[in-house]
Structure formats: C-alpha cells, structure tokens
Length: 421
Ligand code: LLP
Image (cartoon, rainbow, N blue to C red; front, side):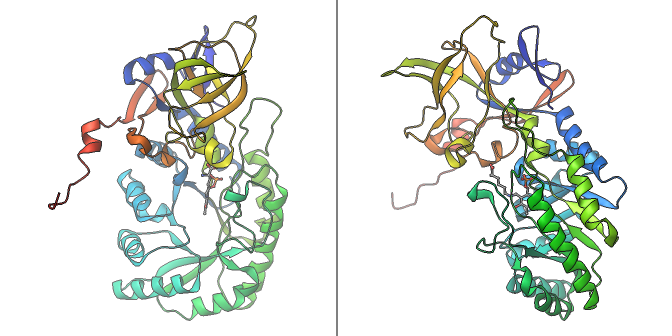
C-alpha cells in the first residue's frame, strides 16, 4: 500500500498534487511519502511486537537524512555499510547504540570511526576483518560487540545480482566453518561475540528461502551455545520483496515474515534484529519525469523523457520493471498504445521499458515511475554531466525539498585543472 493516489484526476503524494511539486522544483525529481515510510516501518515493528527486537532500516535503500530522521523518530535503528552511511545516520540524529555496521570490506578507518562514535554491533564478514576490529578496539581501549555473518548456502530465488546467500557469493563465512571462526573470535580480547548475522538476498518473493536460512541459524545458535558462546542477538538481514506491479503480484507480508521468525527462532530467547530496506522505502517513492518528445520510429513510438538511466538505474542494471503512470489520470475510454520509454542518454541501455502500454502521451506531459523509493536516488550518478535530481518529502499537505538540485557551476567547479595545463 502507498499514499500516491489519483484524486480528482490528478496523482497526489499524500495530500499534495504531484504537479504542484513539479511546478516548484522542476523535473525530474524523487518524491517520498512520510505516511508510507512510517506505515512500512510500523508493519515490521508490529510483526515482531512480542519479541525483543529492533528494526534497523537498511539505509542504502534511500539515505536522505530527512528519511532517516523520520524513521528514527518512529524508533528505527539503522543498518549502515560504509563510513559515509554511518556519519550520515549520526548527522540525522540516530544514536550509535542503534546503528549496526554491515558490509564485506570495512576498512580500518571505518571501524575506528564507528567505534569512536558508538556502535550497536559490527556484522563481521571474515576472519581478517575480525582481527582488524579487535586491534582497533584494543587501541581505543574499547570492546567491540560483534556478530559473524554466516553464509547459509541457500538459494534466495531472486535476481543473480542481488542474491547473497549461496556459497559462491562473496558474503559471510561458510556456515560449516562457524565453529572455528567463533572460537577464534572468542579468543580476541577486543571483541564481545554477541550473536549471529545472516542476509541471503534482496527482493525475495517467497518465504521458503528465509525459512531454510533461519532454521540453519537456529541450529547454529544451539551449537555455538553448546560450545560456550553467549549467543543472545540474531540479525536476520533484510530482503523481503515488494510488489512492483499493480497486477496479481503478492509477495509475503511483513506479518507473515514476522511469524516465520517467531516460528523458527522464537524459542531461543534471542533479541531479534532485521534490516529491511526496500520494503520500507520502495513503494514510498516516485520518480517524476517529463516527456520531452514523442518520436515515431520504425513501427515503434518512443517516449523520450528528461529522466534517464543515471537518475534511475534499476531497469538498465537489473532489467527491473517499474510501473509508469501519467500524472493526469487517463480517461477510461482512452485506448492504451505501446511505447518504448527511454531517457536522453546516448546508449541503448538507457531504456526504462519496451513496448509498454500507456494511454496517449504528449510532449510536456508528466509521468511517474512507481516503486522508485528504494535504490533510486541513492544509485544515481552524474553520467553525461546530468545533475543529481532533487528529492522531496511530503508530509500530509506539506512538502519540502530534502536535497536540492545542484547548479551546473557546483558540478563543474568540482573539477580542478592541474598546473601543467
Ligand atoms: N542487509 C544487508 C546486509 C544488505 O546487503 C541489504 C541489501 C539489506 C540488508 C537490505 O535489503 P532489502 O530489504 O532492501 O532487500 N540495488 C539493488 C538491491 C541491492 C540490495 C543490497 N543489499 C536493487 O536495486 O534491486
């Protein structure tokens, strides 16, 4: 469910007409709904009400500080994967005790920053990393709380580029080696080994892979406890998928996911952490773009937009589908026709959709990409010297620009010309 609905024939973000935002900030832009963000966070939070838990929003999905603060004020923790994300979460007002540090290759500098500023735990991905965390902690006179990310060798049944839980993936330590790795961790005085971490992939549309992974985590918890480790926290990662179309797609609901967690792990009495990103932010955001030209090709019509692959890379990178809808609600009698919907960047990969049925569209019309809140703005680049597009947050009948469009001068003046030129 989201809060982007047609009212009186015009697409609204909560109570604000999207066209009004377009008139104020220009196109293209991202717009997020506070109500949708909070609703999705609350669904997870309520799904785990009867267990000790913390929902740590995977901020890589959409990391604007206004989004972080919205969620943090509702009680969310954050899952960060870089020093930049850690500092951004802190700047948004998230206390260190609610920040979890994930990621395959944390550098010494990143570890030092997080340990100095306060951290809930590091999710450790390898033994060499474990040793660096231990060393830095000892240097700082601290003890670093850690979990070890285990790779359960489970097929997440999602796009290959976002599956992480198979043994051939670069993530975590093989579950079969857990015993040895935990013994190693326990021998390091700068570490406090508090739990187990697992994350098997993103955009999972079935619960079964989670079940397989969590059953393995349950078994491992008992085994490690038997070996003398005080396993008291389980970080179960993110990954629950969202519907990207309005048709019959129905991925499992957070409440069903929460029930699965309780069924597989509830008996262990551990504190549960989850790290959802996409389900919180994905359907809480639109990318709004303008049709520059409608071009008739050989047997095809192209809609050429002012938004491009640098603004929303998911279709080019993962063959991802985003519903694309006009801002003005089409009259029911209007017959849809197929368009190739493309951006102006000079490569064929800059295609959002091929032969997509759309109501008749004219140059100057505004259209919206749905489900663009997660992995949209954060994956944008300035390819073709196109400025990063603004982000807007709506709250009821108010809206605010939460990241402004940079000027061309700001972009161009970041370059420096060496003396010899
Ligand atoms: N925790 C860890 C350790 C992760 O690596 C990820 C996502 C998450 C949590 C959040 O997963 P989510 O709940 O959002 O599925 N750019 C891709 C998605 C990459 C996901 C990377 N890791 C896309 O646009 O589909």
